[in-house]
Image 1: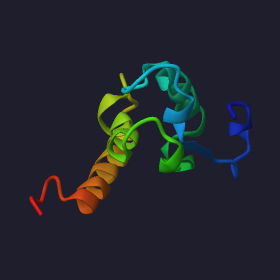
Image 2 (image 1 turned 120 degrees about the horizontal axis):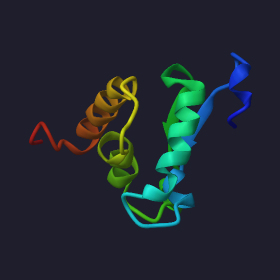
Image 3 (image 1 turned 180 degrees about the vertical axis):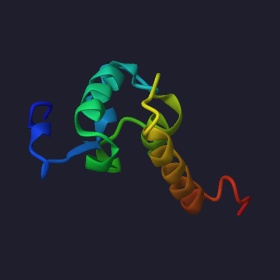
Length: 98
């Protein structure tokens, strides 16, 4: 995908990354690769998703690898992290106590 970033209509999906990892959670094997893609496309042209039926981990781990585990995540990722954590909280009630 890197190289396609010069096309302003192109976007990159960071979906199902855990399914391609060479190691267990927190899947450090794909962090560097993901950083290169993020640097190329930026936060405005990246999106996240997953097919949980094919993942070697829980849905929460699929999300928290992006929201908590990515090492040296770009500063622009901070807002996306907050939005993802809000989504997790809305689904499982972890912060609201429901």
